[in-house]
Image 1 (cartoon, one colour):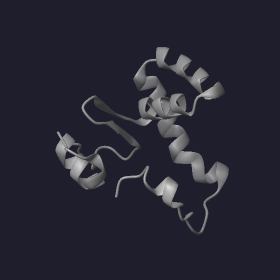
Image 2 (cartoon, one colour):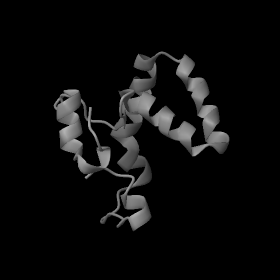
Image 3 (cartoon, one colour):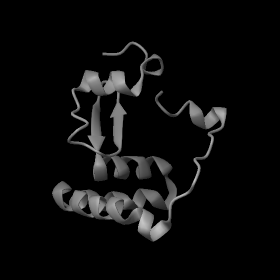
Amino acid sequence: MFASLQSKSGQDIINYLKIDITKIDSIIIYEPGVAYDIKSTAVLKIMNDFGSFWSLTQIFEIVPETIRNYFYDYIAKNRYKWFGKKESCMIPTPELKIKFLN
């Protein structure tokens, strides 16, 4: 187990968890010492952490993961067509930057 998640890169964590990134093109949420989740399960956990009405999305956990992931993949495939794509990325503030792996 990593002594400090802050000192490890995303690639180090992927290697540690033995995640084949040629088979997974998705969001990965990693909880050190607990588990990691991908696709719809990761999104549901993130939305639950938002609190408020976002916690209501947990009702979708009763839907089998294969069905949830079908919809996740469909949305991911069409998101740029529906919502557009920005020409440049946002530069995160220092407060936001510490929430991401480097």
